[in-house]
Image 1 (cartoon, each protein chain N blue to C red):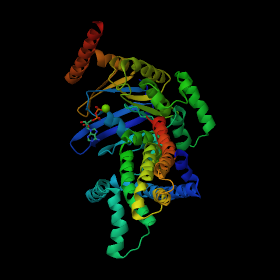
Image 2: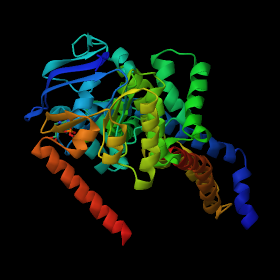
Image 3: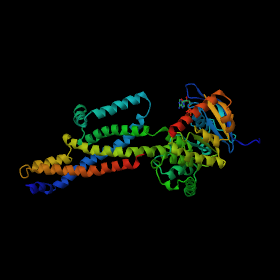
Length: 258
Length: 225
Ligand SMILES: Nc1ncnc2c1ncn2[C@@H]1O[C@H](COP(=O)(O)OP(=O)(O)O)[C@@H](O)[C@H]1O
Ligand SMILES: [Mg+2]
């Protein structure tokens, strides 16, 4: 295997909210163009990990490097670093008082100082590609959950980040809207974006991931290719986790068939 | 008799006097509203602090302003201050003080509510696209707070305009006082003038307050998320 360029390096990361450790000695590298999917039971620290990467949480020890530069220092200019890290959250987090276009343009015009016309043209190109051009003047309240999440993805993408973080972006969606959001993410993966994805959609994880990271109790228990992880998980905890999952899926299928 | 009654309105400058009286009521309430908005925004921000001392003080202030009938406050300021401390306040100034005290409390509570109703992920989404703290407030938090606040503040304005009808009782010559004077002056010539004059006042208040309430409702609907 040839050595690829490391984009993100997480080294011995410890995180504690003040009531016991949440992340324990997490180390992980993400290479350029790689898609890493993080899975694990609820409360195991997945969101916390992503939030530490773009500085929404203070860490206790360890460090995180982006492009070889340490970003977990007091002097870190987060406004600059965050332009390189796009993040999409689980909750519909569009700015409700702005139209779709204004939501998307806020970052490019106010943070990056880009020309509004040029940024708007790009926004329209991306919106067209994901089939939302006709919504460009709509307000978030006029959109479905799936449409909101796709706009949130565009809002992050237009900053041309080096890496995209997705935290369970389909978890709050009605089932029929999950697909349209996952499709956008799949296309991003195909086009070579570097991504870290937290999801409970196992089939999607398997399809999109270059690497699966299994997190449990704040520790990385397994890192493997999706092929190996889903067919031959090494740890008992991963096996149990995957089992609960298929159990849920069978129940769901059974429920629908009736 | 009926056209006699309505004639009272147009005798001399009666109608103009009524309008001027309304003008006094509006002047007092609008002054109080402007002061209340400015002070209320400050109070509201203080109210969101987690400090127990400010919490307790603002709570007492808010509750006492709500419990106390405005009339009692008016008497307290107009007669009480004059008698006890020898401070001589005109009725209009007393009215502005009382309405500002009351309006600031109400406004402060509205501001507090609007501020805490902005969910935390709005701050984080702003941060995630690289906005600075100041930019987050300028482009995301303050506009949303104002949107939530504006209809409520407008409603407070109409409540204040209506409540100004109390200040006749501390001798301010506003629209009701003018009405009483006109009715008094025409007691024998036009016995049913009261109906016409008060009816006119009803319309004057309606004409002023209705568009304001309508606008508040319209804004509320328009900005509903
Ligand atoms: N802001 C916070 N303050 C205190 N504890 C928190 C906070 N956020 C998360 N936690 C705790 O940290 C643990 C990991 O949470 P989280 O990262 O959200 O898990 P996941 O995303 O895997 O479900 C949980 O036990 C949770 O209760
Ligand atoms: Mg989570």
